[in-house]
Length: 593
Image (tube, rainbow, N blue to C red; front, side):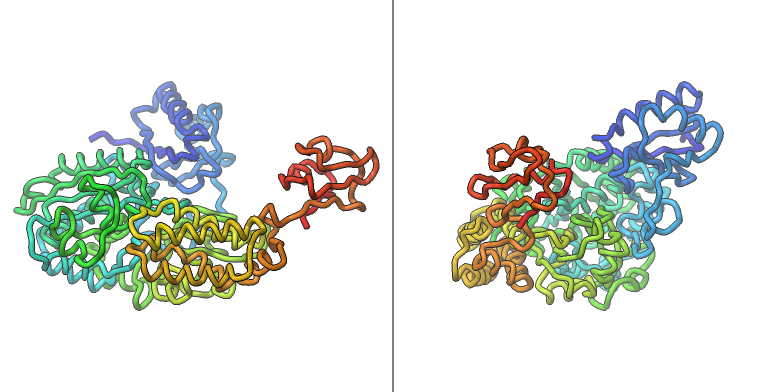
């Protein structure tokens, strides 16, 4: 084995790639060769390190120095200063936000990293890096010291619940699959992450694939399975590539295949790629897709634990669930259960998005409040604006107003509040957000992703979308709110799968918490947030207008009139509400009414 005094991890997330990460990597390799350091410093690729918005970024170990904002021209100076002279280059150093711990590359004080413990720290394409971080020790412990029943009992005592959304107890699911009659049995990892803006699974698969593989092997041992599948969407080419490399490395090390670690237990894995259908995140639709059929859900029972892949007992968990398993086995059920709440144990990853100062992937213990996530971890609302709502659970989650900021984040609390945990998407909205438009946006997504198999989802979501679109276009009618409420209830109670059952959540929650906005759209023909174009009007303030004619010269439809050095006027009947006049005005004279 070759040893290096330094390892440089270069972030190759799409955002960093767009900022020239590959060019930085090539320049770094060339400069290390030129300086005679190529045998002392190893350059590796990894997924997101944590500051892609300031990228390209790289992390230098063992020092743990995090550099951002590099250009190709900066590389010779960086190599000379850091790798020849041993001096940290301050001007490229990542500056931590004020709410982040001072320890380099540490999470925020509110975070606890279990699933993300190795991401950005190891080379995901090198199994030896994972083994150096106690990788596969849990598997060795299971195969040499524990019976399948003991493994299941340990997971049950830990209180691990499925992180895919439903929150079903993982140990209980394993127990049911083990007890089910039928051979062979299968283990499936649901890596079909389809929520807009969510990238929790992708981060783990690209940054620490062996943690998922190890968790799946342990699950297979516990339930008596000999074959497993990782169902990953084809839109994640780096994740698919990294997984295939990791699986082959595990085979080469005797950790997959026949007689694992010299025991009589045999298990193998392969990756199956999905075509990107959101509905294939539902377990029965996922199974149909693996079997080569159209990805449509089927009625349950029977559940996959009794009759799943090819009619055989099948255990399905998502990426995050499996990644927790090795740490539970190594550190014990009590350690895991010490985090979180009474019914929601451990940690949860979330993809923070929206109107925050600091968006991105976080991992926090259950029981943390929404306020702590928004203000302590996310850094508060961008541009000093007021918080308006947060949606949890992805496109099928509910929108919760400021009254719920002190709500603890766990399965029961979010469900009681009218939202869901989901797979971990969180979207924060500020005061300038139109909640009717938000409901329309998410209904458009779920309606488009409906497989069309059941009538309530296929037709009901389209009717809701039509009504919401009409309201946003200023054509709302008396009775629309009541019709929306009726449709939401019918779709929720009569749809076949979780997509249809959850599709009304954004609409129902915004009707409950932001009803006055709907009423303003319908009865007053105005959008309080000034977002819906059909319900707003641009005006020029006489006291601010200087008559510079910039707005008139840039108006694409000639809706603005006025002489030079005279107050200008916008004709509302001609104006198409494109907003160009407001963008080009240098005197803030154009406002939205």
